Image (cartoon, rainbow, N blue to C red; front, side):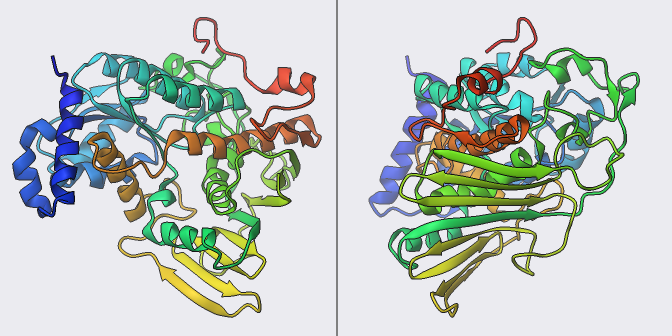
Length: 447
């Protein structure tokens, strides 16, 4: 018997074959032809600052998607999303606080996993076990072992798709300039300088408190070791309050730029990682991690990626256009790639090519982001599930890029340069491997 998901895939492949045969249909005609049999039923899991980026692809009717669930451990977050979507979608989604109940519903085809970092791999693991496709936000893993687990899971559940929220892999201008770089427009690319510059302010000093009304603190912690609630952990500040939930600014934002750098240089795992990082701003506030990091990743072939992360000093350093991006240097020129597009220069610094992002501009350093490029990445996810397109941001690439963030954090925490196996990133020092490669899980939640 053909399952519903098999039918969706077969239907998508048939449509792709029609297009190849020259029978082109506009979006409205396509939606009428496919009807409800092509519909994807989805769920939002995690309704923080990132979830608005998923509204447009679900609202746009030709995408033929129905939102069945809005799930978050904080009641006011899921009710806010319901209010945001009122009158914009035809159905009324169910509100749920426990993602496990969402995953039990066999009618759900795919989920958006925008939970805190410590839930990213674990939530995806549960979703794949339940037979769901996953759109997974960065960083895809909380630690290096989880990045490996995700690649292993993708191989095991090879009929399911896991798309990474590194949305610039679906940005037409970035795809264009990457093809140019790989075809030699700047010669042989040997160095990528990535950066993120923001002016985050003071954060509150955590203090013991009752969990806020409507928060399921037990479920928020999930696979992390149990601790009493501290104010104000749940609302974004978990990024900076220790290593139980967050991965610092490197995990929070470097994933995007490091992904561009790896893509441009065509490298996977480094053989050496070194960092210089510390907390320099608001020394008496509750931020417990570094707020400034300079990291270097050395790869086979004498290639290098550098990361300059300044979370709390907003002075423009590399470009006046925005606070993030990736410079790629080659033997015959260079290229600047950011969310506005790209500019290519010859070796003398003369501009030789430029591509400007079309449509709605993607968020840069503002909380949550979102925009046209995010929508393109989500639609590519939908099309991959239907068999109409190749994935632009597969989990294998997202896991490798997140691994760089994980390694930088280990180098900071250990206070030493890491020597790694360039085949898989494993640490050559056995003591560091044992201490930092994975993490402690709450009993009964082990992966």
